[in-house]
Length: 134
Figure 1: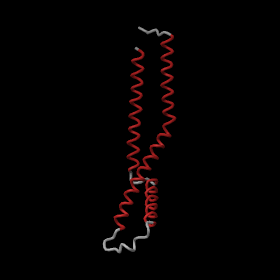
Figure 2: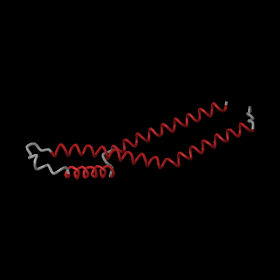
Figure 3: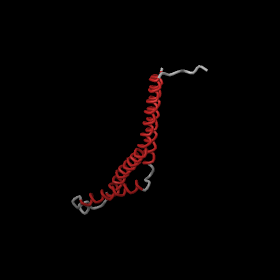
Figure 4: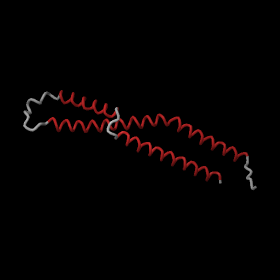
C-alpha cells in the first residue's frame, strides 16, 4: 500500500513538533480566561471613560443657564471638582451595570481580533511544519 518508512530522526522531529503544538494549545487555553477577563475589564473601563466625558460635557452645557447670575456660581472650583468626581463615579457605575452597550461591542471586536490572530499563528505554524517535513 505504499507505506512510507520514516527514520528514527524524522519520527523524533515529528514527535517534538506535535509536543510543541500541544504545549502551545494548552498554554493558549490556560491563558484564555485571563485574556478574556482583561478584554472585558478594558472594554468596561473604556466605556466608563467615554460615558464620563459625555456626562461631563452634558453637565457643563446644562449648568450654564442663560440669564443666570455668574457671580453666585463661582465657589472657587470646589463645586466643579465634586461634580467631576460625581460624574466619574456615575459613569463607572453605569458601565459596571451593563452600560449602554459600548463595552460589549468593543469586547466582541477585541475577541474577534484575538481569534483571527490565533488562527493566523496556527496556520503559519502548520505551514512552517509542512514545509519542514518535505
